[in-house]
Length: 128
Image 1: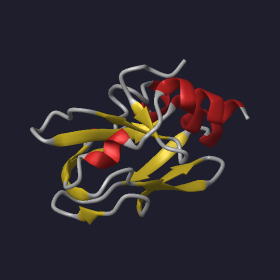
Image 2: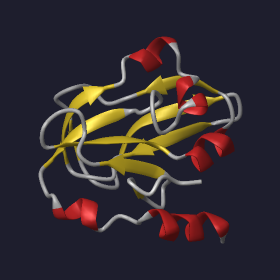
Image 3: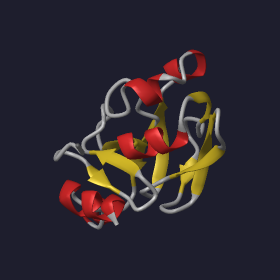
Image 4: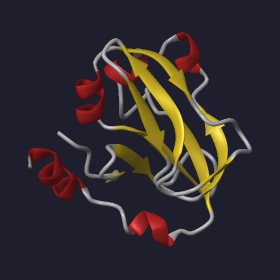
């Protein structure tokens, strides 16, 4: 249910290393999170060049049910954002681990990613 090649946060974000840009990680929300949110109708993401801090809110996902913060799982600088989501935010629902990715961060502390959960630990978190 949760891809083994990703790391996860308690806030339901996933991290893929490496990202498309050298030294970066790609970030999105999990299938569990998109299902809980419902139909995503608007995505607000950090801008390229923004500094982000692990655990801090950096954007929002608006659904037909509610508005939810997006948190950065790592500290660094935003090097890419999924511009496709401006026109098609529903990709977060239909392909959360692929075309529905949110943004990429050039990580300043590589140890942060090793502190994130593996798929089995994340699965236990959402099951409880």
